[in-house]
Image (tube, rainbow, N blue to C red; front, side, top):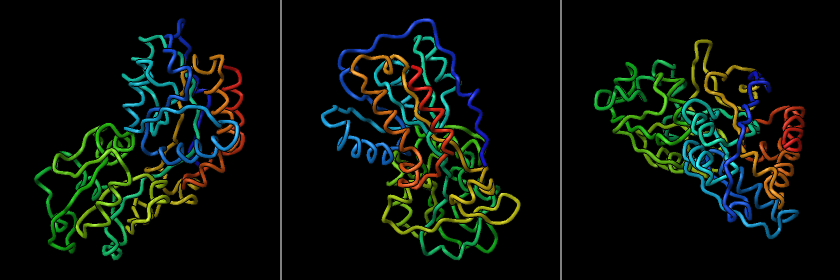
Length: 306
């Protein structure tokens, strides 16, 4: 199973906290990952039927990096994220003196997808994925025949999440060592559903999306098995948990401004406690892989500790 160190999650609390606007304190203010959009939308719908009835929500799912920027600028307080807050993004929050709490919520895997007519494609290696998706191959690798001898001499149509996507950053770093880049001739979108629909409609297309996005989609695509060196593997709950798909598996997070947990209206803390108490069920419902119960219990303690 993927190893998660709770000690590594303890982002240092800065000496001062940026004051948020009155409008932000009166609502659940969410911005971040499209990967977790359906997860949050489902959770918010269920929450509104119970303790969250009447609580206003402002939500924007334009990508993890956009969410981090909104967090560090004080424009949002709850950030669904498909990657860790680190590097320059974390430094911006440190500079803005915003204290943050990090809450892992689920495991995810990146599925490589093709048109269903490609179901005879029994596997792709990591080297072949690099050939297909590397920005350095823009305009150079334009045919499936260039990916592998024996593949058809048909146009290669690459679909990719855009550079604001945490999924794109993760996939790029793992596949071709270029975090946050994309082939300039690729069809791009910030939305996983768009990528799925592009691939489902084009026999020559290939793309990558969150495993959870496939659960919500009604479009028909082929999940291409990936060979990491020990045989072809398809992303699933089992292959994530037994580490066979670990190269393209990751942890999904929620980041919250600590100041929001201390607000008198209690909207942020009440919602997050409600969500974390149902963490495993929500993850499963949305096609992700749940953490263990103790992980969610530890998160609940952190929210209550404020």
